[in-house]
Length: 125
Image (cartoon, rainbow, N blue to C red; front, side, top):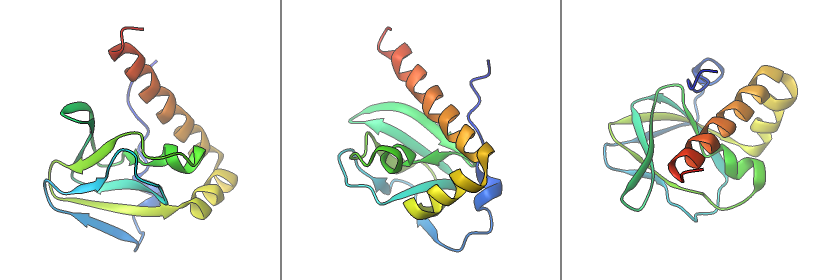
């Protein structure tokens, strides 16, 4: 099994609902109410909790998807390591993609599964 996360750039490369972050800016904070998920088109993001870096992701990565799936608060803080461009999507678009593109749904499940495995390894389990 590969630990390479799915790349979501293809589905979002032409989006016009773009968020631009400068290096050091925060996309969202742990505990925030979530309305959007994001696909990183350019740059590098840090996913963390406090001073702990859980993961650093680059172009093609999706962040914020868990909150759209379970309607819970953000589970981590995400901030820009470098200048970033992200495509923003809401639950309506997320559900449309899940219905119309089975591979998208499978890739989201793989992404969440890989991140959960990584967290379990860090916790020693």
